[in-house]
Length: 451
Ligand SMILES: [Zn+2]
Image 1 (cartoon, rainbow, N blue to C red):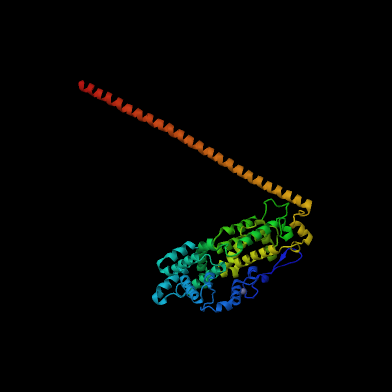
Image 2: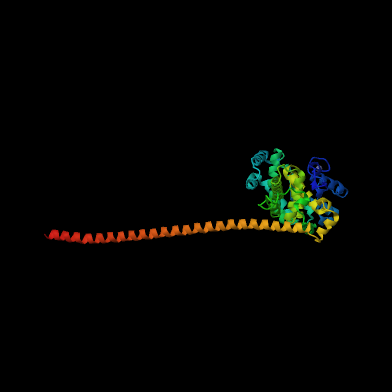
């Protein structure tokens, strides 16, 4: 899928495409096929056993638990389970209320991409009841059978997507895609805790192995990977790939496959930005893959293998096969495949040099590397100092403001107290005046009357 030449890593867009030449993106984890061709292959390989099942459904629906049971019983149970999953066949009961169903479709048609709350509201509304109960039944059954093999769970979820999308057959494709993205988010947000890094597979061990391998490459420099990197003299802002590193680390915290994919896309866009900062020429695909490998090595993203597998198993097929998200995701998978096979020639090192680095027998070009490390540290310290200064300035400004504010409150309080005293004084004066004036007046009156 990728080859290494004199300098850096080379990969053409064609090499990223499905081996079946269907035009979609392939993935090293599917041996270079796209999800569709990979599933079809897997089905044709496993078909002799599946064909003996009574069902004509092409989806593999064998539960490991039931395999031990008698065939007849097995068939009956699977059908029961299938009913749980899908209800009656995917076509809506048109005779029941085709008009209300058209209205439901209309309502879904006005949904905006990304408006998940709007989707939930719509799904919970009375006309959508059938769709909602399909989702609920599916989720409940999946939770009840969460100890099934993860590949089976993946098949069920993918079949569910397909069957659910059928309900919106009348709508334009873009709209169905938008609806299905909401459905994926709804389903996978809830199933994540059951199916991510599942016990039935070796994802956890692979995560640990990958993490260890990435850590063992902490000596790899951008120059070795052929990543255009800013000149140290002009550079003061630190690693230009830092936003990309942050984005790829965030992926693990997301639950829906599309949100994880969004992190991959965000990371990739930052890689392009990082590349454009160090060159006047626009970044090409080779630079991009090298940059992405550098970012993955620097980030050592948590549970990277599990995250990629999770997206592959439970993501919507269209977002992996095509478009920007598909391209970026395939590149990420290639980056991981590259790291797993990383050797001397790929880094322009002799096998001995490579071994040496791996055994930590010598640090890259000895003295030079020390210098590099110390200059890096110095830059980092300078950066930190700059930030510390900014923080200090901020703190000063804030305490000044606070001081001024306290002063202002004090003076306002003083003013108010003075005014209050004045008012009180005035009131007492008035009261006295009234008292004084009332008695002399009455006195004068009596005096006058006495005259
Ligand atoms: Zn294909």
